[in-house]
Length: 300
Ligand code: G3I
Image 1 (cartoon, protein in one colour):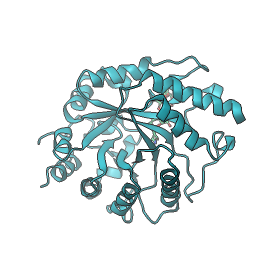
Image 2: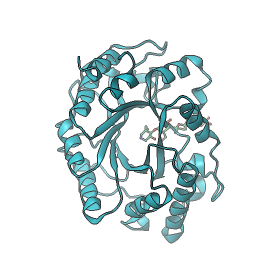
Image 3: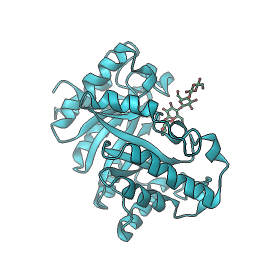
């Protein structure tokens, strides 16, 4: 196959990108995005500060723009994200206790209700762990250690049709404390019947040319808990071809690794644009890393 999406589809997977709604009017950008990808994630437009700018006043204009752009082209959409310490609307940032807990629940119900039945997955909770595997201190964590499972139970009831994911960065190396902390939480959720369907490994790689230790073991270990795994925000310093090929091969090797999403289309669209971490250069040309990914997906 000659595009990333079509190549991934050959093994039942998808290949996605983050989309910035403000760039969809750039025809070079939207042409590449529509041609190459069959899954998209809103880079910012479905986050809490965007969707509930004032308490209980929801705004889906920017999120819907991306959803409609994708849906009209047969491209699926991952929702990102519902409960996170960052990019909270101003009114939420200084809340605490049951007021915040209830606001979180209301937010999940409001946003998931709007998109009910329409999305492939939601990153229900994002980045809730410290590097050592303990819980990140935040206003949400301060409402009680059960805030994550409450978010997932709320999410399941709000839209039973969508896959519910936990999403984080620096959980690619199996030997790393944070990976183990997240693993233990997923194991606990599965053993107690807390609804969770998938783990998103953001896969922001910085430096070097090899993969984080035992990356494929991390994928297969999470999968063995009975959840899907996905690489959700891939970008790689200088777009190392060996790292891009390796992360793609690791996903292909794990049956429950359901897809890969890169965190932007062209280097110039990236939050790390000074590191040229994506598959297309600023002129929209395919980079060597693009070919390395495509070849792995095609089984070459
Ligand atoms: O929209 C405003 C604009 O009105 C204003 O003029 C401008 C000036 O700073 O800021 C614009 O908002 C920026 C927004 O991106 C849209 O460009 C924010 O400042 C900026 O903080 C925001 O950054 C986003 C970042 O998340 C925020 O945490 C990045 O685009 C986005 O790529 C990044 O994505 C995260 C994932 O959600 C979670 N994992 C890590 C990943 C990378 O940080």
